[in-house]
Amino acid sequence: MNYETIITETKGKVILLMLNRPDQLNALNAELIDELGDAIKNAENNENISAIIITGNDKAFAAGADIKEMKDKSFASSYMENFISRWEAITFCRKPIIAAVAGYALGGGCELAMMCDFILAAESAKFGQPEIKLGIIPGAGGTQRLSRFVGKSKAMEMILTGRMMDADEAERCGLVSRVIKDEELISESIKTATDIANLSSPSVFLAKDSVNYAYNSALSQGVEYERKLFYSTFSLNDQKEGMEAFIEKRKPNFKNC
Ligand code: CAA
Image (tube, rainbow, N blue to C red; front, side, top):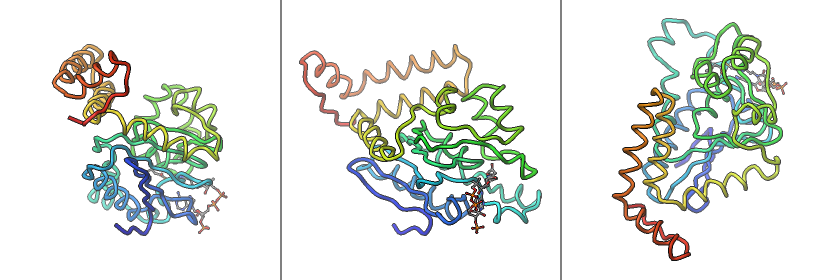
């Protein structure tokens, strides 16, 4: 599939989706969001792909929703069009999605990264929700997801002031899972995605589902939900294979069933 605003590259069972509007710091316009959604849907339907990486370039993961495109919107047009709902495609994907972030991840860029399953950050990464400086507020989940990642105090400070945080601060407060040297970001992300892709896909899907449930439920409901999913994994051939392989001291050969 040919896209105008993203580049796709397959590495074994992993697909890299590279945001590609470098002149605009990968500002997220409607075309890019639609193409990204389409590429994610295609990856989800492609049985040869088991993990997805979304990345940008050295300078920017994405500097936010496209301000030039949004400038003339009205309440009525944006409400009726509900343009942010298009962004949600990524959150419906059951395959694991890693955000590999170098440079700016601001506004919608930070929100896009937070929609992924986890964030690997290059040392150069800078995260922020600067919408307040434009006279608006975050609109693609920033007030909700950032608060859950970093807690109220830091989320409130970031969102009310628009200040950016660097990769170290983002790791300290739990926004990113790891910080990696810039030159190793892509290779390390591919390695991590490949490690996941080589596991039992049904178990990976269930694990992702269960972690996500933690954000939508009370603890007792979540623990109960996890327990049922855990029991369900005993219906998988991959569970028998994984445990037999452990006992026989060999590598498992998962068949994704
Ligand atoms: N939308 C549209 N264009 C953008 C953009 C954005 N979010 N961010 C950067 N650009 C464009 C600039 O307009 C500029 O284009 P031109 O050369 O055509 O003028 C180009 O990218 C390079 O940007 P700068 O010259 O500004 O680069 P810089 O290195 O001096 O500064 C920056 C980098 C600090 C990231 C600065 O570009 C910036 O502050 N960008 C805007 C960040 C922002 O406010 N993001 C939130 C957007 S609103 C949102 O995302 C809503 C939501 O929640 C859904």
